[in-house]
Figure (spheres, rainbow, N blue to C red):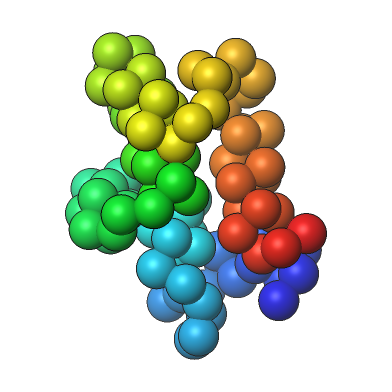
Length: 96
């Protein structure tokens, strides 16, 4: 799946079949369901999951919590626009 295909899939009612749980979390976030996205991301333990978790807390407005998760991901606190970070994470998870 390409980034464009993933982005377009947000128009659908359900996430695309066969995507990773982290991509599913970002898909739910794009649909406006932060809680479902957060539940999905926090159930996974990996650097990428920590990055998604950090992004979600940053979006929520919880800088301290986001900072903790950026540290767990081995990344500095993101300073780009939240929409740009979403794209960066999706592209990373898609291997682009």
